[in-house]
Image (cartoon, rainbow, N blue to C red; front, top):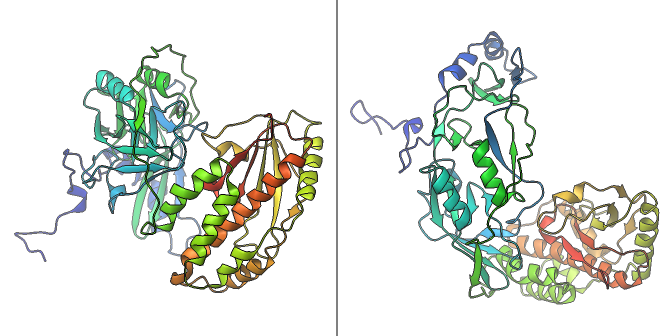
Length: 473
């Protein structure tokens, strides 16, 4: 309850413990864009309007390169794709973005289902924060003092190694970066309120504080801007996991290569491996026990464990999968890929092959897989490259033997699983993928044209992607 003496606090005035506003108001030039004739016309349009936004573009695009670059995630590496923050506090997503770590009250525990990589990363986005090596923290403290806040973390891999000295990082310097009158602007109407956001080209203001080396735009908090000089230093450490875009053009910038001393602090140290147990959530048990097995090709063992977990649950229609096996012949599977690879090799070298089942939970009428060939191997640090295939199969390999479960999924389209069956439903889906991967593994020795790694998963199951290598590859 509020009165004149004790008014209800305005959320816009809320500040974090570091003194930064949690929500910054629009700068004056952004407010002026809300009075632009086209913005006024949008505000006055009827509620039945078809379009709820307008775009206002500048009369002239910038002709010079920007002095600042936007720090972005790279397309080439995703070092935390298998990592999960298991003790994340509720509403932790409201921290970061310049307001620090007010809601993080215990040491963050990050569990990674992969083995520790041979080459460690130095700066990576882990929403709403970043994760940084001690080398990156030293660099930022030296070249951009007072620009970051840090928080120690405990990042543990499935092989019993942990990252030594790594921290969460939040970039805490805030400044209004964009000149709204010279930038592209999107004006959106939400109810009776107009919202304004910069779009390409995003023109950075001419007068910026000389000591502003790396900062967040005060309004568009996800935009982290870096001077070109500092971007070059950061890229020398973290070129694989980061890219830098020119806000004037939206295009990535190639920075000059810098040689750095290879005496780095980033290192691993021994950790006590976490043992999976029944008190854990199914997701966590799967990450700890199943994913490491899949990564080393132990599909039969993974299938046995998943089936035992399913059988331990109360009876459900999904239990039928525990006693089913894929009946698609391994030799037919081998011939399917041999024929495809022979055709693909006519156009370019084949250095990687990917196969995935269709979205089987929503397409119960037919389960099948397709094949895709690549003239490069993008590796296992990120699987974004799997969408950049050079050729694809014209036919499908039908997956048979699991029809009883397909019928269950067909019924599920009309009635989602009850809460009590959610774990059984997810375990059944995991078993479908692992059984499919076993088929690929069994067919591999029969393939004559495969001379490169073969990756396998199912549509929208990125965490289940595995690499299966033929002998001698």
